[in-house]
Image (cartoon, rainbow, N blue to C red; front, side, top):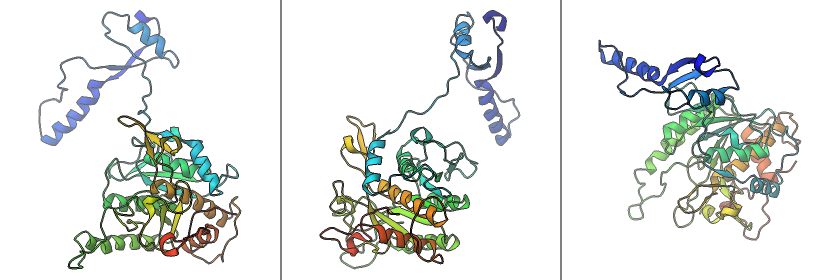
Length: 392
């Protein structure tokens, strides 16, 4: 065949070889004695090798040979983009809180763990600075693969953090591929900490209603699990006291759910609500009855209007805007990365409290000292520390 196409050519392997390898594994597991064979009756594709740069020409020549049904260069396949990132809107909102990066070295020395759907580096500018292995808590045997995100949620979170703190290293821990469990989250926490994360961004909430029965005043079955889950987070914080946890307060405030969601409600976790799309107070999805006033903060979270959304996803009839406390959380994580950079002597200049303060107390001090509380009905019991601002 190499002579027929007039260039060096060899067959490396066929798809049959891959299928037979797994068939052999099954045969051994089942104790069979017959040789393993692929059950496909039609010939399966073969993977060949030619000189680099000659792939298209070789495929063109091979396709003309009578025995060959089809020949195609072995192009790299990338999943279809799941989001359309609006970097201009991210830049606008970052500027509105004073967090436009002063230099490409902002956030140096800080590692941010993102517990989410993964990260697609192709959407990030620059793509460098992402830990080369993405961890997946759903497969304990998985030793890690290059970062990928087939949903887009984690990628938008990463893009916001990357813009505000471009030199921070991002570690992707995939805890969900559309669904996740509490055990996934807990495993993700320890996996992120084990890989040196200074900040863990949790742009999600755990579904568990903390209300009591209106009639008997007893907690519902779900409510009884809250102390149990709180215990696991307390234990994690005890084991990792210098790791800053930042979580979304949830998007179901008001008539649906008046409470800050878990894990944002737990002690030692910074809870993030969404600042109103047009300013002037919290967004409708962040009007909680009561907030942990010493560790709750509001931050930009995008708009429901597709034209001014942080990103959009393909929809059935029109693009779906991505907005909410998930992305507010990312703005806070980016700002905190800048503060931690300054505290460690990095290039982000910032006035600091006593050096003996814990990392949690230091971050709380910085967020409280810099946040905006200058609006008419500001109330710490509803608005916590106020609206996020970054100042040096």
